[in-house]
Length: 112
Length: 115
Image (cartoon, rainbow over all chains, first blue to last red; front, side, top):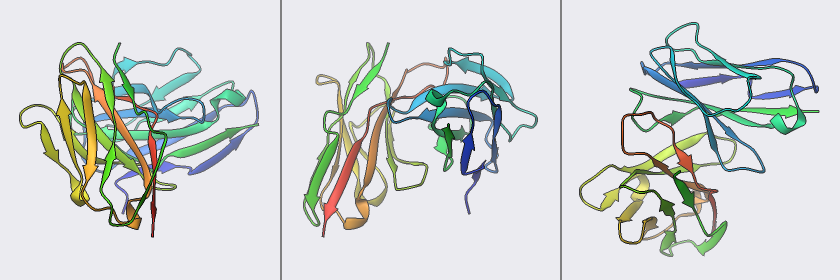
C-alpha cells in the first residue's frame, strides 16, 4: 500500500480557477516536500516543510501556497491557474529535512 | 548553483547486457548524490545514495553507482539488465550542508530494455 497518498491522481482545471492538491504521508516523517515535473523542465523542487514549518521556497509565484494542517499533511493550493501550470506534482517526505525523500505517485494537473 | 546533466536522454540495450547511465554534476564541494527510478505512471523510487566514503555504492535490484570527484560524475551501472528495468532514471544532487533538502534533478534517461 502506498505510504504517501496524493489526491486526486488526475485533475483537469480551467484557466483562472483554483485547485488544491492533497498529500498525506503515513511514514511518520517530519519533513515534507513538493516537486513539479513538466514536459518542458526537469523535475524541480518547489517547497520543503519541516515540523510543519516552511524551510525553503523555490517557487517564484505566490499563486502556489502550501498548507500544513497536520504534521503528516502538506497540501498545495494553486490559484489563478494557467496552462503553463500543467504538470505532474509530486509530494515527498523524509524522516528529517536533510535526508533522501520518498515520493508519492503524483497528481497530474491539466489546465485548459 | 548546482546542476546535474544526464547526457543521454534515451538508452536502449538488450536484456542481459550491461548498462551504464551517465550523470555529471556541477557543485563546488562534494555533494550528496542520488539515483531515482520512475516506472510508468508511478512516483520516483530511490535506487541508491552517496553521502561519503567508498565511492562505489550498492543499491536495490543489482544497481550500483560510482562517485568520481575528479570527473564530477556519478554513473549508474548494472551488470545484467532485465526487461523490467525499463523506466526513466534520474540523477539528483543535494548540497552537502544542513540548509535544506532541496534536490536538483537531471533531465532523466529513458531506458528501454529489448527482450
